[in-house]
Length: 86
Image 1: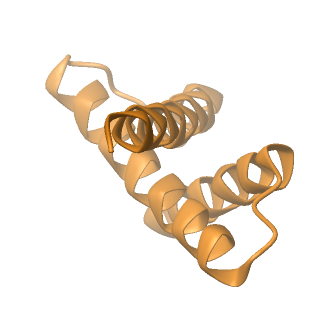
Image 2: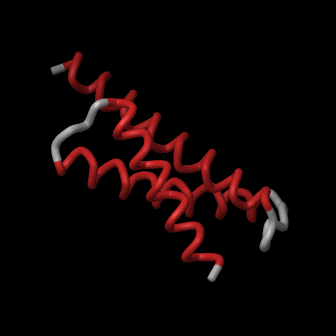
């Protein structure tokens, strides 16, 4: 059940970020949701490596949101840098 919540949190964060950034096309939305899910899982994995026990706690939600939001922001920044360099 916890992995389902992690995926849902990542998807919702990715969706919210895509709405806030104005990604109107389906590709932008789908990519943002996917990046959010990956970021959420990555955030929890990194928290586990750091020794944080987050099972069934509100901190798990927070780490999921931070991971998803952080990865979405990183991908957006890298996309802008790549666009400027081209």
